Length: 185
Image 1: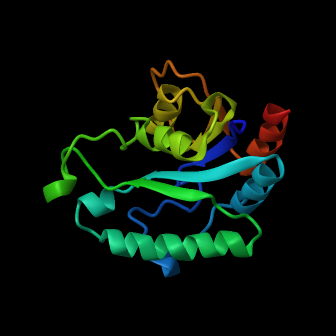
Image 2: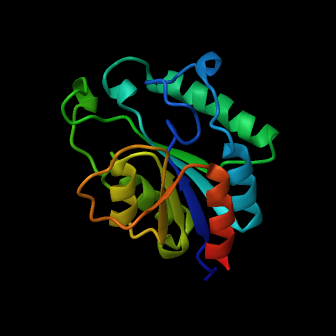
């Protein structure tokens, strides 16, 4: 049996791209400084890279899963062109209270639930304890903790109160790039 792999899990809005709210068009996308460098460094250190993103815009009917897929294809092309390929994107199209029709459900994939991370671990033979998560919200940190991810980083200036989750706050994605090399050693 092959050895389990390490993964870098990235939230999308606020970590990969500037969070403008319900991003779904390439012309509106601005990448967060340092994101391509972080992914390149993670790849060099032997990590697979996954995006795990809640997409309430689908649940609310703001855009379709097909529109999300088209944007995601474009985004993955941008990463590949920068020499920073993403292994796979996992997304949750549900919202328990604002979802329309089939999307209005409580699910195991919407962060803070760990479903997307657990699915990636199963499908790609990932050792979650040797993996890393970067997110910009409390729900990202809770999902990482619930999935037993080894290290998780809260990116940006979001105020987090009453959190019993152990995380490291970072303000620069390049700081994460340095840290994951140390964690991988």
